[in-house]
Length: 341
Image (cartoon, rainbow, N blue to C red; front, side, top):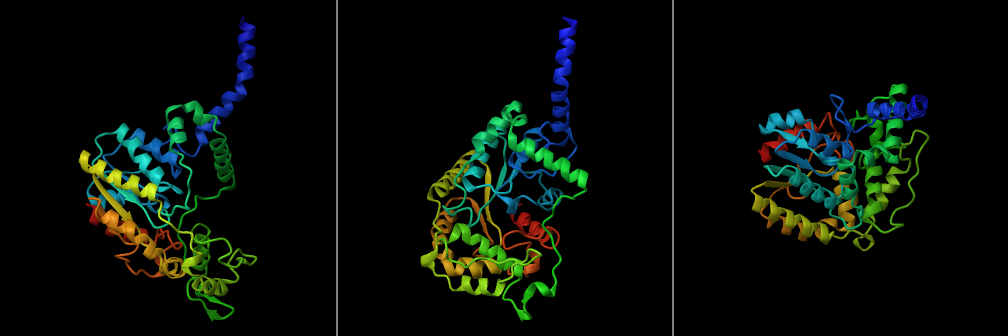
């Protein structure tokens, strides 16, 4: 019997070693054994909340995910948890709210970030919350998930190679504003980003193919900007996600009934997105029914996307949607959470 146990222990040793490595390096700090994590995945944000629930939460996609939470607490005078994450659909964020309310019915304030992009019916139809809830409640479902194991190997590779965590900030030069000696209407990477948004906002073939140079920069930026300005609303595939909008209005009613202060935020976007995407495709007009419905929802609506565009220089933005974490986000934090508080 002792020999059998010894052989079994020896056979299980590789699995135990792998499990130990997984726990040490998995990027989401699922087991709460590390002091801190930079995890921006949904499982990381939700797990961190369950380990330390706060009465006030931030929800939304990547545009809400990168706040300095110490600064948020300082500006607002309140204690917050950020449970937003990159790629979150509006319906996922709403389902996430109800899940968090079940875990903590003492929620006091919710700030939910939305945009024309997440209100677009063509944007992300899959809802991952059911699978995430299973992983949160069943550690085995997390440990044996292929995606998280691959992510762990990526983390180990990054650490061995000494690669730092990416941050959405950049310094810009005059070369980014010209092409072949001629000035561009917008920074080269902003033109590229605007063209990317066409994937979910316009019909296929609305734009010519993007061409990149050896350094990965858009090589036909001027022609791409001209092509976007020539697009018409007839080429748009933007339409309101009526199901998600109705769920959002129901969430506003629920928050009012439970005494939860709900703030719906439409973050600012760079002028390149407004001029190259929204204008030609007629998205502003298509968004108006949603804005009218939200105005009557009873929630506090802070609209910096359409009604109160701050008209910032493009250096405030890392790309057309995301505010530069160094040059813009601290200012945006002061503005937003002074309003929320």
